[in-house]
Image (cartoon, rainbow, N blue to C red; front, top):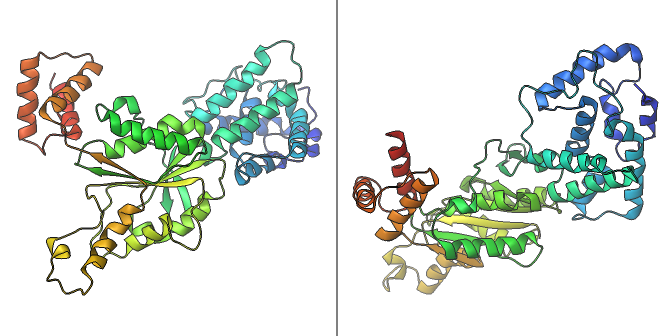
Length: 410
């Protein structure tokens, strides 16, 4: 096989590899067992090609090591001495990374799994590493490969942070859980609301670039694409380190704990997402949100912003009684100020209005055009407005439902 597994004992930064001695076995007599284990994991993980190489790259990308954890802890920075130690380890692993170890007997080269891995970050890493060997002569291989991994950790992170774009907060385990089937919507898929998208992307782009940015409240008519806009941002800026963590209103009391968890990943940017948020006067959760955004004893991490969507301008339900001179509270303005103090903590408030009839029909036209369908103006107007009148009003959601119905009936 042309490789002495005893050399793995020299690893310093990547000693987590040693825990996988059932794959990277030292005993020639254990080769069949090692082959069975490796093929099983290749099928489970969707790894192909040279299986030794693919599995090693997967481990380096997903399991924490001293390099990846240091990059997260220090916002993308590592010392030159630590980088040199990493290069030392890569030099020890170079025979595997350069495919010197061939696949096992009866295993094709390259191996093709039943269901290929869909992790975009891993695909990008594999492509970058392949380019090292596409360039000849192969000089400074270890240094080039080490720097590729370092850049990968900076852009994508490691483990679930690299594999997933969006997460949900699990208060029971005090951890973030990756959302496997996250919507693939992009900003170009959202029709109309150009000014709103410019405000949203401008703020988020500044945040990702490490510039000052604001917490955002997207407020307005239902079905206008507020939630879709936030989800699309994560798909647009994923490769630049942006991730989304969704929490529910009852989980707001866990915000300090969630922020402390996200503080461990300082090379990444996180949007804490609160969808369709609103409060009654009797709800206590909004006080937790106020404190988390601004005013708590512990500062909000620099790598975290809060984006919320709501149909209510001030998030808290208001009544005419709140503004009546005859209400029971002695200081009427105090009650009003309390109600608006939460929304005031969002530095950027983006208003979404229900589309006009012309805009509504144009949304339908654009959605159908993307499916290769063109309706004449009169048919579009009659069918689109008939659908609107029998449904929940004129908005982007209603337009999408009409398009789904139209396509389903063809």
